[in-house]
Image: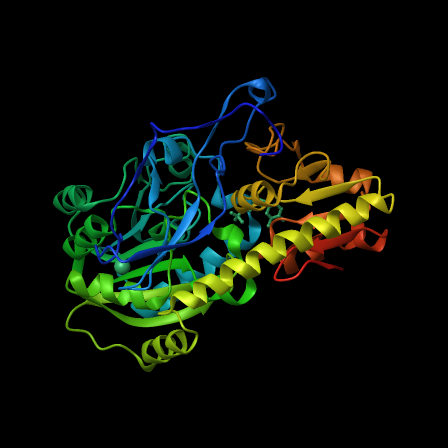
Length: 422
Ligand code: TMP
Ligand code: ZN
């Protein structure tokens, strides 16, 4: 709450659920409060800066029964996803990641040309376009009406809809069963995991595979990646709650891998039961137990560490300004920067501007913190002394891309797990 006095806690557009979205239990413990914050993708135009801005609670809970870390205040998906500013294709590392993932699926599960590959949360079609190139049959499902035309333009048929059981049955009737269903960075966004999972079990071919990718809770725990929590991310998964959820709908986790995207994600492979879990699955579950994911103390300690990080980051940035630095910029108007900037109280008095490759964000202002967003060229033209790496999940790629800026003396500040200048 640094950019504006005109904030309003919006009470119409969200509801608070009473139970856990994976196990329906009600042994829920609140351990962290990061808000209220505005919605992460609600970038403002200059005209909107003086207007009332909607904020929503951002409280984080732990389920004692299935270990799911989750938000219970659920903002209406119509409000969050119908008009969406995030484009997968805007981040080159994600294009590379999804091309590799598609190749992996083709190599390991060899869908043939008559079988259907479905991507739920297909966004601009970046992922499915790889299957189209390989001559495979695809269908994207995504509620963002403003993004679907981009997917269609690159040859990816897209159903503009929220995926759930009813939608799955409609797809099955029209196209038949799916051999592969993928949900990358969509499962954590969904409040109706029961209907979603039921839909998958009904749409999937008997020998088909369902593959999800979700940011992994153990990374938040170990590296304090608290800013991956925002209203769109309703759940932060470890493997335990996923095993529990799929078992409820006649499916089983058969394999799991760690992927280096979004600060560390899990790629989880699910098949219809009976199916045998790999040794990997047992290993991940054992590590999670060792890390104490069943214990409330683990979460209380995490909350304390996050509060300490907030103080440290504030001190580092204020210190730099006091030493006389003219300018600190931000790199990447990421969704997670909304949590970081608002929770840490970083506004335009600290960051002069943020650079970002997404045309939809350029010329706008960050929600709540009201920092102007410019194309990346501005950084290269102005060479600010420091730049706070808000897109820390792309650290290596961005450092490489901005080698010249660094040669000219520019320094990156990495925010976590400990603020560090490089
Ligand atoms: P994400 O972390 O949710 O994928 O969002 C990344 C944001 O960062 C997106 O708005 C694009 C932007 N970005 C850049 O501006 N420059 C870059 O080099 C990369 C990789 C991303
Ligand atoms: Zn639960």
